[in-house]
Length: 335
Ligand code: SF4
Image (cartoon, rainbow, N blue to C red):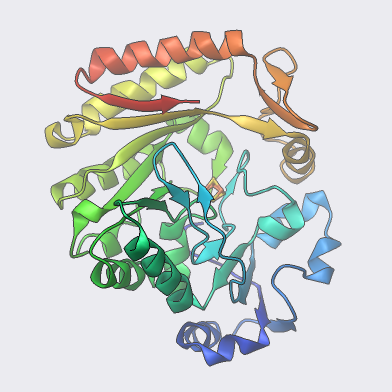
């Protein structure tokens, strides 16, 4: 389902005042459209039930971004920046964007990208130091690009209008073509998210498979990027050891020699929630159950994470394999 198959479009009236708004209305001129007051509150979608989760993924919402609050971050970037979209039309069963399924699950694209970028450029210019901006924490920008076709232009606009600052974003897609001709690849850090193929097939519905993602890493490296690799989210099932061993073996076999040099890894264990459980039970009744009473514990109301002892054991297992196979790798963090 890489290609979008939208069945309905909800749009704010003033998108016609933006080039991107006009482009999208024209591009999807055959798809039924409904005018809305605000992309944040679409009354009729709020009434959908959990079992209708998949249907919502076929709706595209187009509006303007009104909130531009940057959140400090201390992992890979300095700030999380609300960017050109929110939500996604893939269906990873653990996606944290499913915070409130009838608001965050579907893809919302924002047409006021110049305003979003100008703020970011100003912020970057006014800073004393070179900052790294995470622009993909609300969406998968490579997938969004299939709809808006703006990733390359947005990136170039940032690079040309500020002499400092870097952009970074994670992805689960091999749709890297628009990145290959970017002018300054040292200031853009794509981060490819990997999981064992077994997990991708069972849990990350509608994303690129492992081989495609590994090929994309090789291509990025060949074209001058230094992409990071996210092993995320680590999911503990009965086949955990075999799955992650197979993943690391496949990385070893398929990543080019150049790509294997000093790989920077981020490792993130899955967190889950009551909302995910309810949606997944009803929307994907035949899918794997990601909740485990034995392995997980609560953190906050309705939020689950793996017990520390369980996580520590699995963390050692993965780190061991990584250090054995990629001797000079850098592990940025494990959470
Ligand atoms: S690709 Fe990323 S944003 Fe899209 S559903 Fe999966 S985890 Fe969420």
